Image 1 (tube, rainbow, N blue to C red):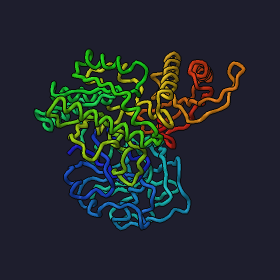
Image 2 (image 1 turned 45 degrees about the horizontal axis):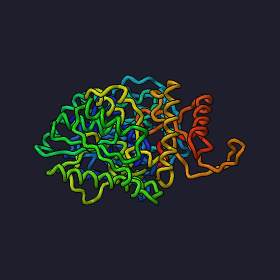
Image 3 (image 1 turned 180 degrees about the horizontal axis):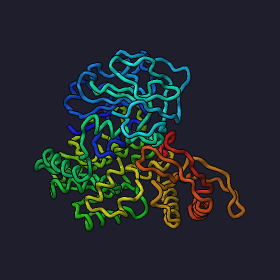
Image 4 (image 1 turned 90 degrees about the vertical axis):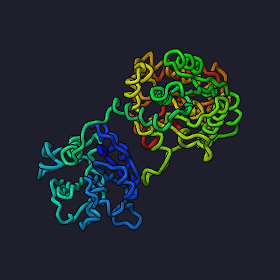
Length: 510
């Protein structure tokens, strides 16, 4: 099948591999390194990529795939740790390098007939390893080296197994995309067929087959993900879809009323509006842990969906706008990676859920969702609105959520967005928002001593939300935002600017 399977061995770059493959118009999926051979065969991949990882292949607790993987006859590309796994399992020798290699390296190409076809000599690559291949397996050839890695690229074209010591998926590797393209197209024979039009056709058929004549409810959050999921399902099953938009009291100023009208009039969705502000705030009372807040909000949403489904009668399916980064950050099932945080779509669901889930966007990255939205007729303005978390402003209040803390963060965020738009940088940013901190500081206002709360401003640039850089905002813009918040938001006397990238931080504070 025209699909690339990526086995995750714990690399920080695994998601980048999947993205780069999709950018080459080939569908890719990430699965855990120990996926059983029978499941791999059932997925019928046309190519397999082994990710990097933080371990050494010779360590007792290092992750290894089923050795039978290398006898399947499916083309395999090993990246960094993946190259070392290939050598380790097929008779080569991997040892600790006398000198670690991190950062840029110059690749000296010895053979351009396979994986390195069309690459320039001494092309720049990105290295990140402490081990190196000392002896290559029988039947393999070294086709490139660096000053520190005598076997930087190895190939066995008979077995269709290839390995690179560097990371072709990162932007620092100048011709990394060309390496991946050579593997996918020249060496594996895959075709260019992954795009949003083909995705829509495929998903509509899948949804129709799965849902049949049954009713589906879909929770709208106000964000683009749940809207696109609804429009896709509506395209598949029409009036069998009932959307539920809950006013949980955690939305931005005036958002509930405006969006409810837009959902019904512009998109012709069947939308049930539910007022539940008090219910959410009552349940959140006393909760300060980020995970606890997310789980409470997720459970209350499900309770409301169950109640509304009971009124409708005969509802068997619950649709959600879960996307790939939600899944990756909420679970560790993809590989030996750590869970970052629960997303209410995937982390707050009860074990005894009454519905079968329909998550048509589960395999998509954010930029792919936006491309899909455009295909479904959503305006560019709505498509490029900044992401808003499913749990709403609850995760922008560090500590307990109450009416007063909501008022402060809501007013502060409105000022941030207003000034960002006025500065004409809204579309340049991935997100811009305010965070209310559980910290009080001494200040002086009107010759009076104050002891009030602190607001943090977060402006970030990103392409997919998986990584992000803090935005180097002009001092004048920060000055305007700070002055307005301190003067206009009662209870706040200090503003700070968050200059943390992702990683090590996440974009949201909770």
